[in-house]
Length: 117
Image (cartoon, rainbow, N blue to C red; front, side):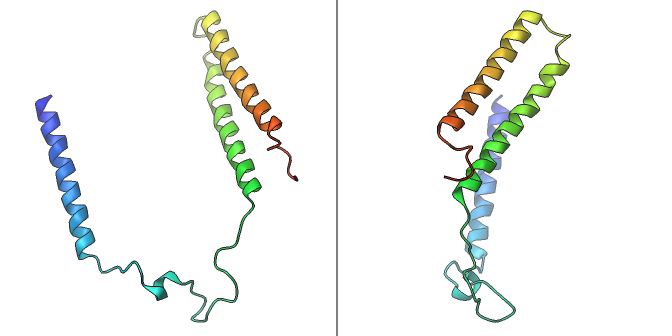
């Protein structure tokens, strides 16, 4: 156990030393105006480089990803149906589905599922 602690400490110290050396030796300037500006074939850009995006679209995407991951968690529950105790499987499945429905109700209640406001 002591050897593991010593080795992990040595690894952390060596990695920190390497990061400090790379920061000292790097030639990158954080305030270089030319490198921070967008490049369009050598000409100045005609419009803003960063276009605004819809925050509502972003939130819909996050909701989709969350429910998509939860669906991916339901599939193993189906395959383990015959291998585990029926009571514990039903209790776990019921709890998981109820949590999904509570999340869906909350999103519906906050009007996050409506595309237009």
